[in-house]
Amino acid sequence: MTLAELSTIRDLLVCPRCRSRLAAVQGGFACTAPSCPYHASPVFPVVGRWPVLIDFEHSVVRRDTVSCVRTRGAESLPAPLRRLFKPRNRVAARNVELLLRGLPGPEPRLLVVGGATVGNGVGLVYEQSRVQVIGFDIVGSAVTQFVADAHQIPLAAASVDGVLIQAVLEHVLGPAQVVAEIHRVLTPDGLVYAETPFLQQVHAGAHDFTRFTASGHRYLFRRFEEVGAGTVAGPGTQLLWSIDHLVRGLSRSALAGRAARGLLFWLRSLDRFVPPDFAQDDASALYFLGRKREREMSAEDIIGYYRGAQEPDRRRRHASDP
Ligand SMILES: [Zn+2]
Image (cartoon, rainbow, N blue to C red; front, side):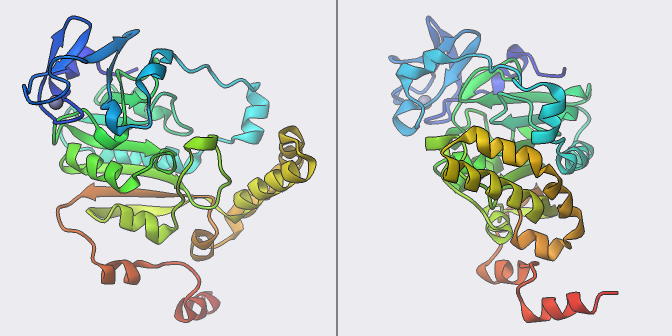
């Protein structure tokens, strides 16, 4: 485990409202800027061992519920069933290796946004002695050092060399603002790795807001140079989810939906027979690995970016593939 001690990253922490430095005070942390509302009272509390660095006036996280900060429990399903319902994310595992290898500097810092639980396929991140991991989420956990809202990351500019954000951007109200924050906290050649749903049913109830096509996901990261992008899970996985939710709807039972998913788990294996251009138009989830740049993609760039199967010339090219 290479989670950085809070004391070693203490100097990187800033006020989420005005980005001034923080000072330890009675009951928590205060902003050092006299004009900031968080300079005196209220200060940022510490709940359990986690400083709660949230600007509550601008967050869906409420001050009165943050006392519920807790360590999230382990997966409740037995391992064989867990593999059936949630197989190992091999795409993430491969891409996280690329991310780790591409991090600049001898002892890079990697920020995990929404990192209260170790994401599927990204365990390697926590096993690198060379990499200092910083994690935060809206709840505290064994793999986070502070509680924060990704719309206002309480870290100084250019303070981390890499960012991992897996299955988080659909749960934020302002994905573009979160990506702008990721851009701000990254060092000039820093890397970001994101996985985000495209065709998935609502999950996490009231906290699920957005989906992205491959082009939409690319444009979200328009101030990054692409290192890699593609499909995490394709049309077979997408169909499996859809059947699960159709059965849920017809039977009014989540259990019946899960049973259908268990019976039809093999649909997922059809993903491997769908070529990438067709897969990206019908993907369950997509990834993007990119390097921070100041130049932004233009509207023309993003129209030229499309790599799916729906343009006539792409269909023809596909038909003539050997
Ligand atoms: Zn402040």
